[in-house]
Length: 291
Image (cartoon, rainbow, N blue to C red; front, side):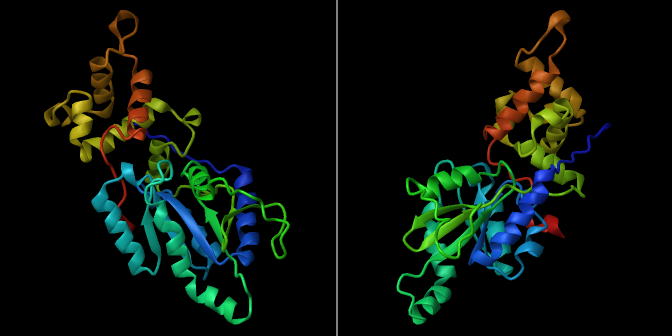
C-alpha cells in the first residue's frame, strides 16, 4: 500500500524494569501476565518466558469485551494445551476478576499445603503482576487490591523498593514496571500495539497508522464498522486505504478550506473509535498466527 512506518520503542528504563522482574522472581510463587485479548501475541513480552523460566504463569486476557469471543476461547484452549491457565477479564469493569483469586489459590494449593505441613500457621503466597505499558495493569491493581493497599515491604523476606500489595489474608502481590518488547521483529507487532494505543500516538505518523488500520479492516470488516460510517462492503473493496480515509473524512464532514478533507482529524477519529470498541469485537491475532 505504499509507505510503511517502522515502529520501534524501547526506552532505557525498560531494561531496568526487566532487571527488577528478575530480582523479584525469587520472592514469588506465581507470575500473572496481563495481555490484551485483541492482540495476545503482540501484547505479550517474548522475553518473559526466558525470564520466569519454571515459575507457574497465569494469563489474564484483558479487554475481552472488545475482543471476538470465539477467538478468546481459542486462545484459552491454546494456553491450556501449553500448561498455562488463562482467564478472560475486563479490568476496567471488573468482569471476570471474580475468578482470579480462586484460580491463583487452585494453582498454588500444593504449595499452600506444603507450607502448612511445615508448621507455618498462616502461609502467605506471593504473586508478581507483569505486563507491557497500557495493557491494563493499573486498572487491575485498583480493582483487585480495592481499599486494602497496604505496602508490605517491611515484612521479613520482602525487599524494599518494590510495590507490594496485600490482596487477601493469604495473598500478596508485587507490581512491576511495564516492559515492552525490546524490538519488533515482525512489522505487524508494532502496528497492532500502535492500533490499540500501547505505543504513544505522539511518536507516530497518525495518518499512516490509520491507513494501516483501514487496510486490516478491509480484510476483516465488521458490520459495526460499516454502519458507523454508513458504508457498504462494495464501498471499501478495491480502493486504497488513503482513499478510504478520505471517504470516511467526507462522510463525517471533516472538511477544511477549499473543500479539502482533514485526513489527520479523520485518522484520529478512526483510531479513537476503534480503541473505544465502536467497531464491534475485533481480534487481530489468533493462535494459528504463531505457526
